[in-house]
Every structure is written in C-alpha cells, then in structure tokens.
Image (cartoon, rainbow, N blue to C red; front, top):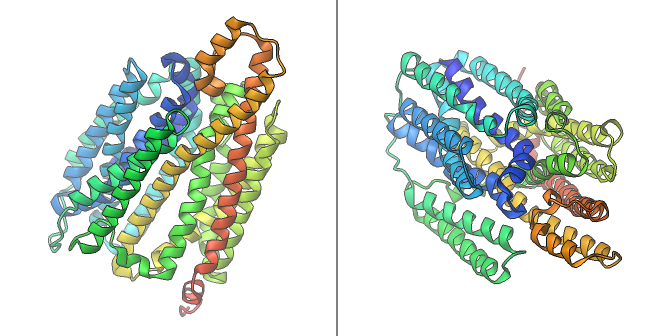
Length: 491
C-alpha cells in the first residue's frame, strides 16, 4: 500500500521538477514561442492548483482508492499524450490532462495513508512517504536532464506510463477502499469551475499581455470578476471548497500570505533558471538538472532540525530569518551574467537559497497546522498546498511578462548600435518571440540576445528577492499564540 502511494506521488513530484529542464529541448523540437513554453508549465499548474481541494473531497466522499486510481490513470494518459505530442498545442492540452490527474492522486495518496494506518503509526508512515518523495524530487531533475541529453525530452513524460501501471496493480491488490461515512458534505462543482476559469483567465492575460494587450486586458478583468464571484459563492455555500471563515484566523492568513510570497518567488525563478543555464550559459540538460541538487539536499537534511526549532523559539523567528536568507540566495543569482561558472556563481546562490528554504519549510507547515483547530488540520494543509501551487502559477506567468519586457528593452538598445542586414532583421523578427531559444547564426546578434535574456532574468530576480522579503514581513502578522503555542506545552 505504502509503495503505491509513494510511487504515484513520485510521478507528480518528479514531473513538476523535471519538465523545467526539458523546456529548452522541446522548444527547439516543436518550434515553440516563449509564451507557448510557459503554457507547457502553466496548463499543468492551473488544473492542479484549481482542483486539488476538489480531488481530496471527492476521495473522502466517494472512495479514496477509486479516485486515487482515477487520478493515476488520467495522469498516465496525459503523460502518454505528452510523449507523442506532434505540436506544442497538443502538448499543452496533454499537460492540462496531467494536471487534472495529479489533482486527484496527490491528495488521495496521503488520505489513503491516514485511513490505512492507526493514529500511532500514521506519523511514521507519512514520514516514510515524505522521505521517499524528497529523494525522488532530488533525483528527478538529474535523471530528467540525462534523458533529455542522451535520449529525448519525450521520455521525461513517457517514463510515467509503466510506473502508473504498477501503481494501479498495487492499488487494486493491496489497498482497501475507504471513505468518510459520517460526512454530509457535497462536492463544490460550481466553485471548482469558477476558480479554474478565473485563474485561467488571469494567467492568460499575464502571458499574452506582451502579444495582445487589448485581449489580455479584457481577459484579466474577466478572470478577476470570476474569482470575485467564486468568493461570493464560497461565502454562501453550505459546502464550500475553501471556506472564507478559515481566513478569520490571523495566523492562518499570515502563514498563507507568507506561502504566497515565498513559493511564488521560488516557483518563478525555478522556471526561468534552467532556461538561463541551458540556452544562455550552455549547460547540458544533465548539468542544469543537477545544479539544484544542493538546494534539495539541504531542505531534506535540515527540515527535521528546523521543524524542531519552532518548539524552542516559536514560529516567528524561523519564518522571518528563512525568507530573508532565501532573498539573499536570490540576490546572489544576480552574479549569473556572461559567463556564469557554476561553482563561483550558481552554487553559492543555490546553497544560500536552499538553507533559507530549509529554515522555512518545516516551521511554515507546522505553523499552518497550528493556526486552526486540530479537527481542521487536513483542510489547513490542503488550502496551504493549493496556495503554494497558485503562487507558482501566477508568478511564472507574471515573471514571463517582466522578463520579456527587460529582454526587449535590452535587445532594442543593442540592435540600434549594430549594422544589420535586411535578412538578419527578418530572421530576428521571426525568432524574437522565442527569447533565448531563438535560432540565430550571427554571433554578434546571438550575444546580444543572450545578454538581453540575462537582463530580463535579473529583473525577475529583483522581484523574487522583494517577494521573499515581504514574506518575512508577513511573519510579523503571526500572533503571540502562534509564536508561543509549542512553548506552553508541558514536557
């Protein structure tokens, strides 16, 4: 049973980290623009973030194993379609299908563990699950980079299919069906539709703003209206997907605000860093995948220590220092110019960022769980997980707009100083939308494009560092009760 949940969750977690390394290769193969490339990540993130709470509720009400297996099958189907996608449009649609599947399998895996083990053993089981998923998250980018470099980016997706077959077999043979028999809740289908359409419209407006401002503006307004309508529906619903009452807790609101800021900054940089390393710095896909390994290892090794820190000093100290250190890690990435040797530029930034996140992740999770009564711990965790996904969804879209603006500003200034033939200008006009992925032979123009991407990337870094600092400030919202809640516990 535990093997099935670990294997299924690993598919989703690996997919979330590996795809970024594969982006340059699939962009070149499918001739994708920078905007289309963003949708490869955003289509998955949109449906995962929007339907995550719905997936958990459906399993509790109608059968955890049933919807867990459903999620695995949908995810595997999407993966197969990704592996054989002939065009970028088909790939984006298949990624959306993967996101739907992940929204059911991820909450289902933890729900099955909680339902299958007695309370005295569930903590150890979840610890094993967390440990193995952390290992796969560390190995995933390296393995994915190797597959991209030596086989094909399509294998990054196709490898999920045999894993899914094993999970379905294990689930049917070793997992008993379970559900919440006492629950009288209903599925909030209207809320799920509204939040998906609303977030999708806002994301579309941010990604397309540089290409079609009028359409982006109207789409953004529509998205905001749909999100506002979602809030109204949730207030009046008897079984809301996200109860607005939860945010009456200052501690719950503060920890989720910190999550929004910090995970937004991290998710946005995590998308663009592999593009910068591979397309500008000319790292191999394997090297780019391995570049983040020190950060992942630091988070894995020090999370237990930092989780215990909250019992000694309260939540406010680690949730202030951690994001500030992470902001320092982001700022160190400003040293990634041309060239950017790994050990003197990327490594110090990744190491500092990893320590900041290691100091933050476990205390943040603990503070979220303590911010509401114990009976609502599952809801608190689910909402916080959704907030972290939404943060990455919005920043990948928004940072793309920022990077494109910086890229165009720098490139326009450079080409004014260059003597370009009409042929070169036509090639640049055709390839410009690919940003650093542009297929340009002229060495002088190629250097200008690389420098322009670095300028845009540095703009993104400044915003990420600012968001991390604002996250540290939001930790000051936490009440004294949250700060000292574990200190008051008897030994």
